[in-house]
Length: 258
Image 1 (spheres, one colour):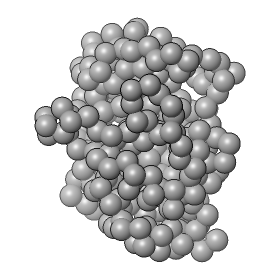
Image 2 (cartoon, rainbow, N blue to C red):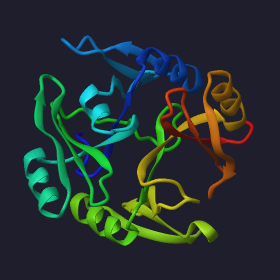
Image 3 (cartoon, helix red, strand yellow):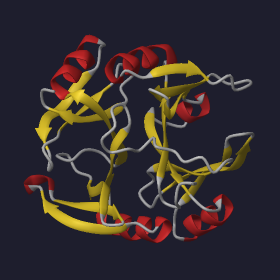
Image 4 (tube, one colour):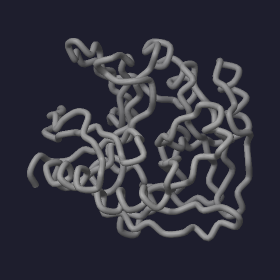
């Protein structure tokens, strides 16, 4: 069964050094990262066991020249890419990469939201579902989090585009309010106001590890930097936010000492 409109189905790292990024994430997350064999492009696929989680690609030079920064970006499933592009841009989003058909993969487009935060939309070439987001599976994304310049506008924008529901609001003190994003009354992410305390405006994707303490040691051994955490979150998990060796923000979730 195909993923529903509004599901996160793929995660992509745009970086400046593919070999170093591959070494880092393989060590920290246990991913097997392999060449996609895509003609004319060095695009690498990350697997957690048998499950494809995402891809790694070199950030285009023109994007770097234009001031773009290496990032993790998420792909959101849509029923119709072209119709979604039209709806998103009509609502104030910007088209960054036109709808493109990738043989045997699907149709994709890259856009930015009202705050200029990039994301992809995609209609897969087959009905095979993605489990790249799977809250409790090791190596998979376990949480999707948006820090928005305008939290209220972001909630309205994403709810309208992807049929997301805004759930419980949690008070995080100096960091402000945190609003859970739900589907079928199940939380799969959250939205908060970007700030000096909460961090810059961007999407963050929390990949699950068995032990946060062990992950901290691996991050530091591989040349990464911990910016925040380990910090406990509702449900008994702990999170960390950090920078990989290329300066890309990343996030992990797991038990404190599994």
